[in-house]
Length: 182
Image 1 (tube, helix red, strand yellow):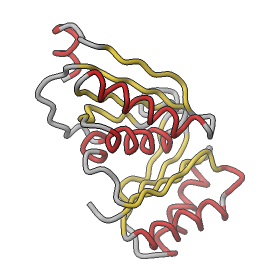
Image 2 (cartoon, one colour; image 1 turned 180 degrees about the vertical axis):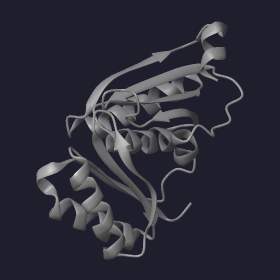
Image 3 (tube, one colour; image 1 turned 90 degrees about the vertical axis):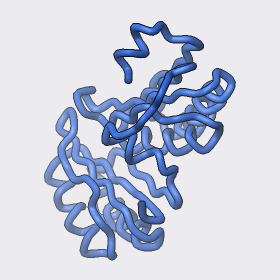
């Protein structure tokens, strides 16, 4: 993974496509994902050096501000984020399960980064607005105290921007549930 990741999330596909073009023209970044997500929002996830990611995200924020829903820039993101987004996380067992939901795609990635860096937890999944009417969620596992601390830290990190929806911590999920989640 490069040194930084960033995302912008727009209300319209047209603004999103225009923003994606502006972002790659602004600085030397790579587009990880540029696509429509539910319910017709458009997200652009980029990677590159921190200064390039910052310049690209800021340019897109400013130029298409009227249609902007949310955005972020993360320097040195946790290494488990992209595998959790793309379903490539390898988790052997679920001890305690933490779940956090947000109203935006960008805020769930910020929450995942904070959660993964707060305590010894493993990201199970980060669902970015696909099939969720624009909402997003993350699931993580570890010891109950670590999961609780991580969920609380993630919640606190995103509450200020109004994108937090709900969260829970389940101490010992039933084996039938664990089998479905893994």
